[in-house]
Image (cartoon, helix red, strand yellow):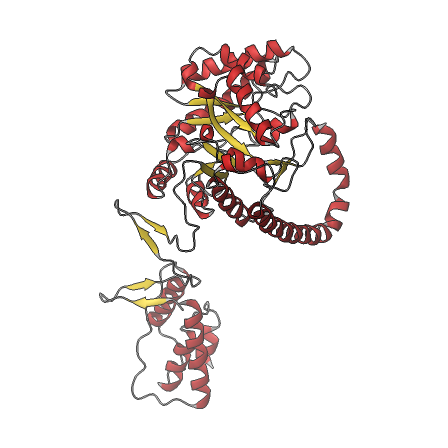
Length: 475
């Protein structure tokens, strides 16, 4: 009783039950010696310290355990396991704490010559050898180096990416690890820098007559270019800009060219690629003549080029839906701009009709352009050895891109000169496969969106005033 009363004033430790048991069995109940009090306090401090406490000394062999004592020991042992469940004894006698981690599925490693490893590429689509370099705009989430692997995952022989967030003015700089990993993967997956077409930020407008806003755009634009050179890339694609209704097209075109000239001076070798546009509002670049006017004002013409987007061409009024229409359009481009400036293409079908001026991308063969047009494009020698990039909807399922890339590679094997305008059985079959995938994943995504909308309904109602204010600010 005295021992229990004395110990009631001491902070309990995992070894307190053992102490009680020792006192009971040795008949030492009249008092607690001072040295035992000190030892108990030391045990208390050790239990509270980060380092694991030493194992308790073995009980004397003369001790006989009662049933209540056995229960006491079991409880003490249970507490020790809870506090030190991962404590191990090393060979030298030093305690080592091992943190438990959830089991991970082991992945095979693809060893490379420089000793680095990559996750297994087992199950990746086979990348065929093809003079038409067909790919997609893949994600760089989690690190710019991931874009290379994501391209290989869909069987792409070319790819596009954002080198930073396309909807933010500023992003953290690349780490040395990011840059090294990107370059290493480019070698491992055998991609050429001339077949990579990074895409510029959607915020940039180099044609804005407001000097402060244009400078902000230029800083973002230049940062992208410098990131591309860090990665060893050769091309950079961007939307030329808009007059925003406050300047003439000629004035904005001159501003765009001035920005390109300044960017060339601040970079080493990157080629700036201007994308043609659909023609809505005050946007510049829907007509080939406007692209030429920008290039004409650029000092270093060896470092400027054009990317032709099929959806944008069609929406701007260039009828590429037939073989004759495609040939006439590319001939017009050659006359007004020059085929030597064609550095890449975006392959997108169009949800909107000819001349609609609406930029609405559709999956290959499912829109107004039609799959036969893409057969003409990917069998035309004039489009060889440049990045041909899909920007079609995926509904968060990249297997759609894998199917479209496989379909386009298949069409490139056709001798286009011997095929009429009639859609072939092969093309109908490919469209059917793409349609089936698109419908399945579109329905799946719609179902997820519906569930999310339902679960967020109450929260949205509570925040309706805040949302309205935000929308007002954006407007």
